[in-house]
Image (cartoon, rainbow, N blue to C red; front, side, top):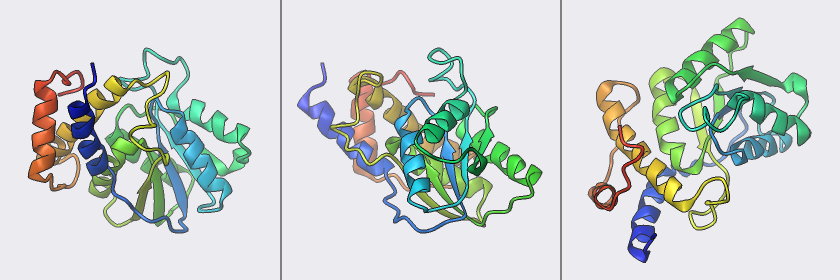
Length: 214
């Protein structure tokens, strides 16, 4: 049962995961694959609003999608964008990566292969992966200008038939742990975690939200 206390603790972590960047015109929209097709819809909307002239979808089948889909995240997301009106020639697809680090590294290779050298990126991810996406991108591509955004959905409204509230909390907890541990391992840049956020993490872990911990 998801109690009021659990919702309050989870809201704190949800808010922490947002970096609250302001959109600016950029060279490229980079979409990091996931199990949430609303990420593709957000990216397509941004392209159609002319925030950037190039749309890249990155993602193979990861730990959350390998049992859900037979089609790669990038290919599935690209189809959604095309159905929404994005021209196919404005899209690049990287469909081999299985984690955030590979999203960046494999996209770098794809751009080099196409002799493209964007200097500014809008990165689109799930709301509770904004901060980790930012920290990972900046580790691998420190010289690029970066804005991170996500589907504009509140914590209360985010769960749906495919992604339950309980599942969201489990994944958020895992991502917060990764922000701490991956910086220590050198996989991403350091992000300060306020004491009250880490205390909320520890309370939720103690309450059983541990399925996505390392």
